[in-house]
Length: 504
Image (tube, rainbow, N blue to C red; front, side, top):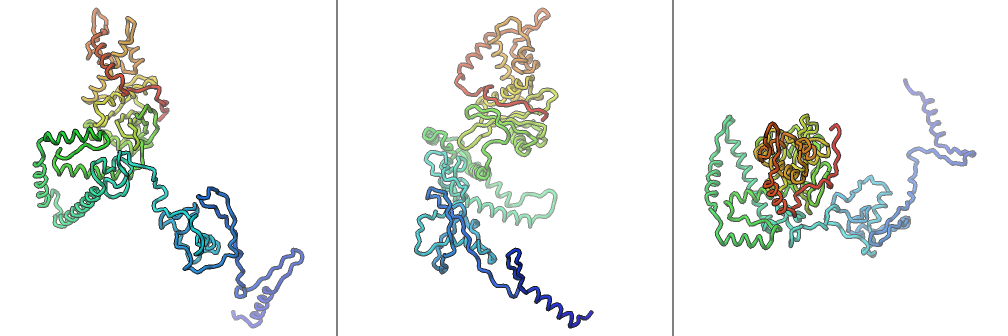
């Protein structure tokens, strides 16, 4: 359809009417509708912003500052120091500085103008720029005596706060650690380059023979290991003893001449790699609930269903030392009781034992492990004693899961022997019952009978079973207890804070 002239004129008249002034006397307001082309820029009313005093003033009262009369200065007169953050400190990194876009509002520009000063003003109240992240704790120090916390065993950090990353503890300097780190990185690059070349030259066969480079490297390692010293000389032994007496446990023992240079270098690399992993780890204790603590010894209860990855790693760690262990990944039906020793760097793993949540045969231990560095120190017996302590709280009779390994049988037989001798030493009656012993000690009657037979204390005479109270074995046990009376390698039932889980 074609628009006529009358339609156009009517439309123009309508626009003119809309642009006219309309005065409403009842409301007392004045409204004016204008076209977009006729709009005038309205003056911006300066706002008042609350200004918090600096921390150095010791007060947190707020003042209202009016910027309406603030004179604009040239950008050359502005202070080049970083803008203040809302906390009153300079930004810790470049990411903390807000770079405003061209479309930033007028209010934000005024707020940022607060951080800019005139050329004649005083800057004594302004806090200094922080060079490190705000979560960086400067109060932490390395526990090694005489260490200034500078350097790191990996050679990639400027500071350290633990023994595992202390160069001084490992009888090294910070510069030596950096040189070793550069050497390791260079060797890794060369190895990757050689692997790429070998992969390009190889054919896709099922059974690939070693390359010439690998054969040469194998021969080189064999020659290096032949240079290993057969034994330490008298001077070296005296040097090692003097170092041990001077520093004690605050320094790592001297490792030179104990093995070949190749093996020692491998060990140093493993130490640096472990120290790098420890620097990333933020855990200071196992997950789960701490149910026992006495002194520096603690026991944590970890649910295999809630902390699956951690429990799987425990099982894989135990596989390194227990050949008969077959369970690695199905950890949901088990509870793990982890014993640790605490110091100023965190909790260190001593050992652990796992326990089935709902055991049909009342097994109180499924797998038990003591770390090699803590063996023959009484910790294994503490773990066994703790498992029976839990059985007593549950008012059950427990027994380890069969079959037992050779070392496990020796450990349990030693524990059962000690429990029976202590019970017989304190027993004053004339008739004794295996059932009563089992109820008081939480040891399975089958284990009690087998232990009595091994000690030759169970006899069959005139149709009755008799328990012989061998005083020589009891006296021997009393003498051993007297020697270790000052030892803290015992479990205290009063330090246990635990209730049996229900329906787990």
